[in-house]
Image (tube, rainbow, N blue to C red):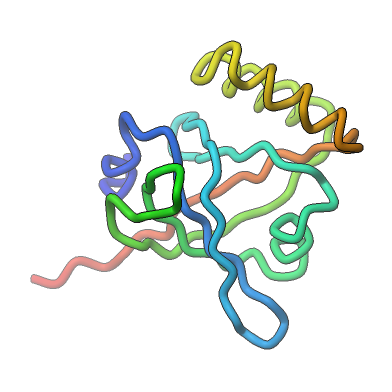
Length: 132
């Protein structure tokens, strides 16, 4: 297992930095769930972060507080959006297991605000070389 994943254990949020076409970073604190060596985010398919990830899957992630304040180190990663029904069902199960009723309330509020299509953002940390 990637040693860098350890800093995400027992964390409720991560901060993900996606990049605009001009290279400017956009940092967003989000809920996440871990499945093996993959971190998963649940987000609206038309969100800015999902659009930026579809264009360029290079991201940085770090464990964070709900406010976005970091509680760990930024790590380079690759992300991809997966809107398949299998991926959506899988991420729903992961998020429900981790966040319980709060995940369902969050989803209900999102639907009331017009969100209907979601995506699973899959994040894989890049191995960092170790200096000897």
